[in-house]
Each structure stands twice: as structure tokens, then as C-alpha cells.
Image 1 (cartoon, rainbow, N blue to C red):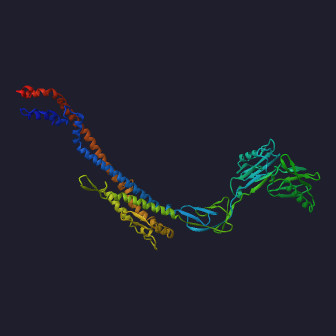
Image 2 (tube, helix red, strand yellow; image 1 turned 180 degrees about the vertical axis):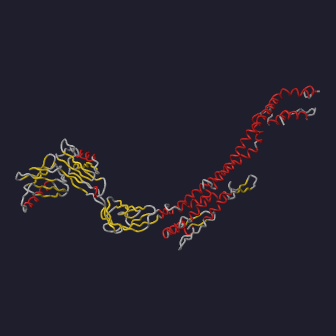
Image 3 (cartoon, one colour; image 1 turned 30 degrees about the horizontal axis):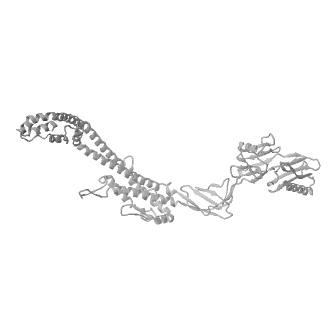
Length: 577
């Protein structure tokens, strides 16, 4: 009924009595207000709210479908996590292939093993560790002090370099020598090491092993008088040697001892020459002495009969600190020789790290399945199963609620009537009853209970860690056979196949169910859109026009009120008569 019709109806029902017409009743009946005028937008909205009743039902259905999508997606994700666990337990390269190596003495020998390495116990004896070659020079006053005129030659497996030394030469100082050696890229690294006594050139091989050893020689001298490079005052010589010979074939090699002075070495040379001459047919006529100058001490060798001699310095001025060598020992009684302290291939799949000499004693390496990793994988399966079954079961749990009037209502999850979820609940619980029987022989693990895995009253699983660990340590192969079977047909594969019918991205039950829900949601959205554009839009136009006319009519009521009162005889004169 329009606003104008309502007004006319009220007016036509009014009798000509002394009672005045109450216009506030008319206004209130149309606008809810006691003053003329209508809020057209509010009035239209109120009318359309009733017209949209079907739409609100559709929107409620959409809300339910959205909740179902969220709940089903959560269950799908939980089932996929469970499926991933089962895949891991069912692969030959998974946790059952993981191995660990235990050493009886990690101070001497440690090792790691690749997945799938055969179990066993191995014996390792380390006679020598691999070593890098190392040399160091005699002391100089500093790394920048000018070296004597000479030369040095460094030879390694990568090549050789001869460096002239002395003022204006490539090897003017120890620092210059280090730079020249490093630039040659001969598999060694040179540095100048300085301390309170002076500076030394140190040269260390980059790699261990006898094949990576290197040597240092100095230029031979031939003449009647030779003087060594200065040794800083208070410093001593390293372990070294020098060979002195002449054209007649006489030859003496003298070894210096680390810590000796030049004076000590001179004495040693003279003693060696004297002893040689006592029995030789061709004498070696030289004498050695120690000298001193402003830069320190030096060694002098001079001819005693003006005849020439040659002094051969294979390492004079340098001391070999360490000779590069291979690591040696035995593995399971078989000798090994390795250029490094890492030995691979001696035991298939095992990498052995040599850390020290075993002093003749053997270190045991035990290769076995990685129980901790397998236990973690099984416990992860239990955790993810509990998550999946918990989400499924929650859809069927009754929840009670009481309204303000005291009425109690029981409800279930949004997927309680979903056949996919209900069938998944049955499949998950049924898969747990799998029992493994080997094709031949017996097994200590045929059910989950044998691993300490049992079901709780709410459908979730619990793990007795002691029982599980005992099975993994005592019968690891039986545990693996339970999960993988004789041909990947055990518990894991059986369970995986059951879950995969739901999780398959191509045609799994979850995908089909979600697509169906999405189709319903899309259809409802289209119905709402069509309802709004087809019916509600027209109603809004009609109602806006109708209420606008009523608004115009009500706006004219104040002016008409006096006229109406006069026509009905309700005025001051009639009331006084």
C-alpha cells in the first residue's frame, strides 16, 4: 500500500465528530516519525531487506560452503603430509637406508657412511698421518734486510723456480723472496715470520702427500774463500748440511744440529775434514772459522793451500722442518697409503678421517643403520596421522550450545554429512590393522603394536619409545620389512595407496569434492548476481519513485491541515458555539 493510499484510507474512515484527526498517527504509520517527511533511502532499504530474504539464504549457503572448503583443504593438507611420510618410509633411499658409523676412539679415527652402506665392523690402524712439506730459512735481522749475493732454487711437482738474491736482485729481501715464490704457483705458500729474534722465510706445501713434497737448494760456490750469510747476533742455526769437495775427488759432508752457532758448525767442519784427511789419499785442504760483523755472525771456509774447492749447499740457509709424506696404516689388515688424511674407497661407502697415530692399536669402526633417523621418521608418521585423524574426527563430534531461553542445540562440523570425509575416517582406521607376513621364515615385527604403536580411545596413536628403540636396535631388518615388505609392498605402500585415492591431484576424492563445492558456490554467486540485477534493481526503482511521491504528499500536509480542520468544522468559532 502506498503512503497516499494509507492517508486516504485513514481520512475516509474518520466520522464527522468533535474528535480531531490525529495526523501524527498518519505520519507514524508511514515513517515511524511524528513530524512530516519520509527518509526515502531508509524506507527503500527497509522494503528491499524483506525482498532480499532468498538472497540471504543463498549467502548463508555460501558461508557454509566456504567453511567446508577450508575444513576440507585442512584435511587434504594433513592427508598429503601423511602420504609424504609413507613415501619416505617406503623408499630404498629413505630413512632405512641411512647409516651411521661409530668409532671406538674418535681421537684417532672418525668416519661417515653413505646411504645404503652395508653394516659391519672394521679395524683401522694408523701408522702415520699425511704431512705437508715445510722449510724455513735461517734468521735475518728483518724481512726487509738485504740478502747476500747468491740464489735459491725451489723445485716441486708443479715446476721449478730459481731466484737470485742480493742487492738489486729478484730476491733482494725475504719479503721479495716470498712474493716471487707465491707468484710462481708451485703448490706452496711462502710467508715471512718475524719475532723478537729476527725474521725467517717459511715455505709450506699447499697439499699433503709425498707426491706434493718440494726441495730447496742454493747455488754452489767454487773458489778459495767462502762466507755465509750473516746470522743475527744471539741466533742459532737450524738442522742442515753442507758438502765441501775439490777437483781431486775429496769430499766431506757435515750435518749441523738445530740450535748450533756458526762457531759450533765451524768446529764440526774442521773435525770432519781432519778425520777425512787422516785416512784419505787425496786430502781436502780447507779450514772453517766463525766471523762477526755489524750484522751478526757468519761462517767462513778458506783454502789452506790456495787450491779451489766447491761448497755444495743443497739446503744451506734453509732447514727442512717437515718432509711431505703419505698417511699409512692398515684397514681390516690390508695396508693403505693415502696422500691425505681422508681415505675413501677402502671400505665401500665409508669415508675415513684419520686424526692421529693409533700407536699400533686398532680402532673399530661400526657401520649400522641410523636408528635415530629411522625413529624420527616413524614418529613423524604417527604425529601426522594424529593430525589427520584429529581433523576428520572433529567433524563428527557433537557440540552443545544453549541459547538465552535455555534451549540446548547439538551440532557437528561443517563436513559431518560429507561422504568423502566419512569414508576417509574408515580408511585411515582400517589401514592401521595391516599385518605383515614374510614369504618365508618368521619376523619379530608384523603389526604396529610390535613397534610399540597403539591406538588411543580418541582414534589417535601413541608410541612406546622403549619398545620402538628396542625393535630398531635388535631387529632393524624386521622393522624395515614391515614397512617396505619384500618388494615395497608392506605397511607403508598399503597405507599410501589407500590415502592416495583421496589426495591424487588428478582425480582424488578431495579434488572432486572441492570442485563440487566450488561449483555450488559459483552457482549461488550467479543466482545472487542475477537476483540483484533482475529483481532487486527494478524493485529499488519502483520503491524509490513511490516513496518519493509519498514524501511530496507528506510535505504538503501542514498546509492542508488547516483546510481539513475548517472543512470538518473544527475551528475556534464552532468550538465556542
